[in-house]
Length: 403
Image (cartoon, rainbow, N blue to C red; front, side, top):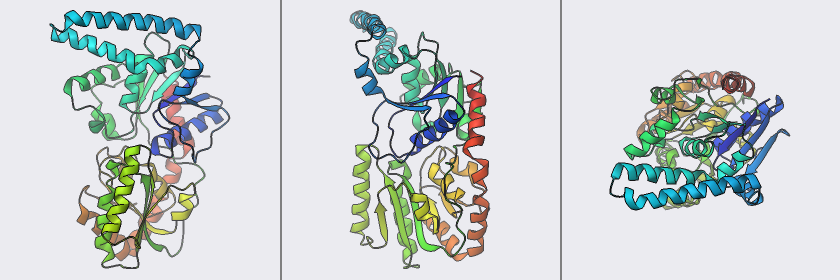
């Protein structure tokens, strides 16, 4: 059977690691050899368990352990020679802008792919699944000349993933068109890349983890909740502002945000959000909490889940909240994930993004209209079967086995 390698940046408690882990574990259960290859950092407190057929590999550690391997050293010698040749050419090419730009790109392609190339030299026949355009670029150049297959997996709103520099974006789209396959989370993502990715392409939603608690039935606690990565795209300040408007009418309600900071910049953002809450005098009503392994058990009886994101692929926290029967209010953000899954007033509420009053009104409706909240809760829970790990893995394997 094929050896499947997911390529991601960080392995911490976030959406991409969760998506990769859920799929990897299911593939492992079916007998595939699976690797989750982490190019940056592996966290110390991870809430995910791995199947025995799934290996978690730190690329940094792998490079350190194999630096003297003869296959690696021989290839490194060739690439170093090529790199020096390109650098010498640039003494002349600087007078010819187009040629110089091409050489600059070739130099960059060698540099960004160096570490990953070492892994692939010793695993030359794998099926690679990089999550996101930056990791696809790195993987594409690392796999040149090898017998690897490459399936692109989109993870976010593509119009925001591509660089703003037109020439760089065009170069990325050019190499993206050479992928052996692609999987998108939403139809919006597929439409965006329609002119570049045409073979072995599928829209496959994220899998819902198998061990979620059952939907809650009963009187719900007056708590509005979100659990997510603390990142600018989540626009959590909007959620705080909307809740403050709500709190004036419903002072018994609380807001709980379980936040996971992956990057250092996100730790700063988390502290800024806490300071903002304190500056408004709402620290007793708004709680910014650390991530919790049992977050679904903790929140299943809360009044509702609210997402204030500006862009998403397909939010894992949103579909998990729906799967445990929580009434949901979500911004109709870029990437199309919310509108792909939520039917307005049927299994949740959609509101315009970046609109504090609209978000406040959506939250208020689920409080004022208990029949609407009950209907959304009951219908949302049906997603549990539609996006089960088993069904989603079946669709992924259709793509994988075609390359």
